[in-house]
Structures are given as C-alpha cells and as structure tokens.
Image (cartoon, rainbow, N blue to C red; front, side, top):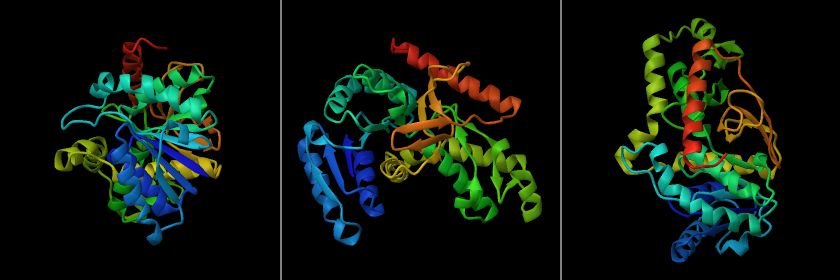
Length: 314
C-alpha cells in the first residue's frame, strides 16, 4: 500500500509523520521541488520508524509515484498571518497547473487528496486538470472541513466533558470564513444536543454556542498568529483520510468534492458528509438543516462559486 505526498513543507511532512505514527500503508514517497528538503524530511521521518510502525519512507520524483493508491497534494505557498484562504487563490493556482498533470501521468489509478489552501478551490482546480486525463471528480477530494469538524467535536466534548469520539457534529461548506456549523444536526448518545444538555445537566447557552462557533471558525487564524502555520491537526486528518482510502473503510467524513447533484450547489466544490472508500467519494449525504443554516450554506457555496469563476474554469 503506497502513498505519495507532493509538497513537503510543514503540512506535507506532518502528514508523512502522521502516516508513520499511525501505521498507515507500507510505503510513503515524498516529492518536492526542493529535493534536498524532501530527502532530509524522508530521512528524519524514517528514523522515527523504529519507534512506530514498519513503513518505508523515501524521497523521489514524480515517476516514483507509480503504483500509489493515494497521492496527497500539499504543494503551494503558505498562508500568511491575517491572510484569508481565498486570498491565497491566485498565488497557489499556478502551482497546480504544473503539478497535477505530472501526478496523474505517473499515478493514474490514485485517489488525489488535496490539502493546499484555499482547499475547496484548489480541489476544484485539481479536478479540472485531472479531468483532462480522464480522472473522475469523485477521485479528487480535499480535506475540506474535516479539521473544522474535529475542532467542533473537540470543543463540544470539552464543554460537556465527553469523549469527542462520541460527539456527532459537522461543519459544512467552505473550509474558511463562511463555513457553517450545523448545530441542528449535533447529537451525543443519540440525543439532540439541547436534549443531551438537559439530561447531562450542563447548559449550552447562546453565549456558549457563539464562543464555540468563534473558536472553530477562527482557530487557524489564532494558531497562525502564534506559531506561523497549522500542521499537526491537518496532518492527522490526512492520515485518517489515507487510511480510509487504502483500506476501503467506507467512512463518512466531511471532505470537499465537486457536487454532481442537480440543484443550487451543482458544479461547486464544498464540504458535506461524504461516504468514502477505495475509489474516493461513493456518496454525498445531504443534511436536514434549519432555514437559517440552509441559507448560510447557500451563501458559502456562492462565495466558492464566485472564486471558482474567477479562475475562468467550470
């Protein structure tokens, strides 16, 4: 089971490290324009193997991606403090016009996993270039709101003093400022959130909700302001996503993918819960949202649609 990672900056290397620490697959190939950096990261991560799982980690070129079942794309420039993800668009779009064709040439059977920001737009762009080689959009997915969803669940778990693994909650739409926290769909122990709060004896006030919303929505900005970048959380999300694909786990995760269903979101790449397996997205799961949540999701989709149109692609 072979995974490629293209772009070995902080996110790419953290993803490779997470794959090793979690024992995902058997081989990881690191590809970067800076070959010395790729080799150094491969050596450093390989030295952690005796303390973790028996994976092969090495640096290589695009030709070494042959046989990969999943290729993680972390290429691009980093987000600057105070910069929105959508402001990254023009700086990162040119990178993909070179990277994607080389990946699909050497790994035509792989599922492409995009993590470069702004991830929704970059995933759409990757699918556009991959389609020219006959790759269906369901095999080009982005990390989307996986990390936002994890943050949402973690904060709810902390509030109620419950393991986040047992909190069911989703963040939808853009991975960014317009994302939508689907409060109406949250549940713990099979109970809607408000009912669980009553049973548990832990109130969840509007102020609590506003605080959690702000902490989820602004988390990346706070981290970037303090340390320059986010990488551990997204690296762990990537490892989970690769594991699902390599082992055909049929998991439901909030990844972004181009929407193929008739309706107002048709043709836009954004996040909703999606069923994933070896061949990428198997199904998208629509949510029964409140009117205000549905309006917010529509607004988020429109923001992404405008950004996609600014690239001059469909």
